[in-house]
Length: 131
Image (tube, rainbow, N blue to C red; front, side, top):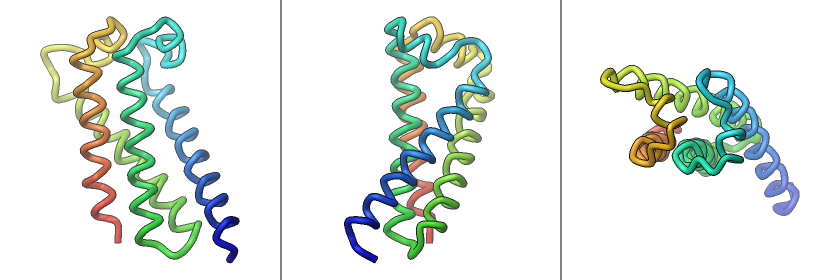
C-alpha cells in the first residue's frame, strides 16, 4: 500500500480510537463533565484527559510498530483503551482516603498530575507488552 495512504489510515484510526476513548471516559466520570471543566480552565481535569489521550496514542504507536494490519492496530488500540479505563478505576479505588473525581473537579493539580502519570506510565507498559 502507498505509504502516504497508510499513514493517513493510521492517523484516522488513532483519531477514532482516541475519540471513542474520550467518549467512554466522559461516561464514567459522574461528578463532572470533562469538557465543561476544561472550558472552566480546570487544569487538573485537563491533565487527566491529556494523560488519557497521550496514553492511548502511545499504545497505538506500539501497535503500529508490532502489527501488520490496520485491523490489528484498531483491536490493540481499543484493548489498550479498555486497560486505561481499568487503570483509572483502580486509581480511584486505591485512593480510599479521597475521591479522585472529586479532587479533579476541585482542580487539585497534584491529583491531575498523578492521574496523567498513571495513564502515560501504564500506556508504556501496555504498549511494550503488545506482540
